[in-house]
Length: 238
Image 1 (cartoon, rainbow, N blue to C red):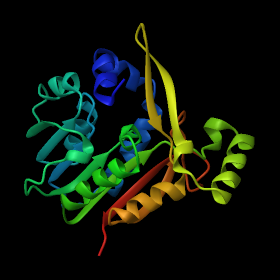
Image 2 (cartoon, rainbow, N blue to C red; image 1 turned 90 degrees about the vertical axis):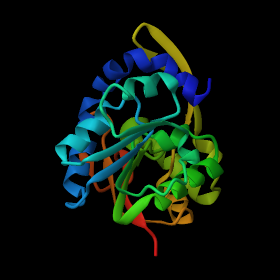
Image 3 (cartoon, one colour; image 1 turned 60 degrees about the horizontal axis):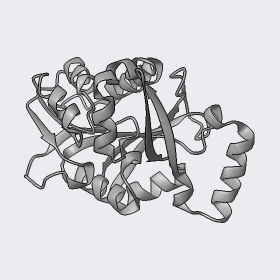
Image 4 (cartoon, rainbow, N blue to C red; image 1 turned 180 degrees about the vertical axis):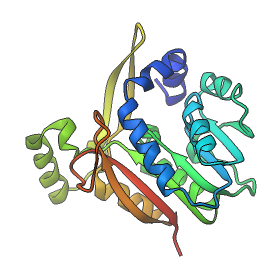
């Protein structure tokens, strides 16, 4: 099932599904509000889902121009009911070269992990870099393959050693069954290592301003790369 088909299938139950991760999503959003440039007036959200999260973030930060994007036609239909400035149905790696620039670009809840392969991920990050206004910021979170709170210390330490000795990004490729409403949806995605995502950002021309981790169950923030999902604040490289 493609990413578009996956999110078409879960669109009707998306808000209920998000509510199950309210601690994590709320903590990440609070962090973004704290780190938001004071002068930010425009926001591009890459992989918006139903759009409610990005619109709430924009309202809280006084952002005037909001562009929502998603590859799913069902999610885009929902986004178009929310009063965003524009809504684009487009994949992250195909964001348009239309001259628009944004003070803030968000790509949240492992959107990057739903892109197939390293080159598409780099292409998406480069498009985001190119669409940043001067002084702008990219906020990005991804699922962490080295997250001991999710996978246990024994498994994660084994992964850390193996990934250090024989790096192979393909180990992060995974399939999963999502229980959404009364449906079980089979999908695929990617779990990142801290080193892998750091390399992707660098290759795409983005500099890391900060990296934090947030526990996926509780939302607790940590500085350890082994204690949660990875959340990055980035800027365009020199």
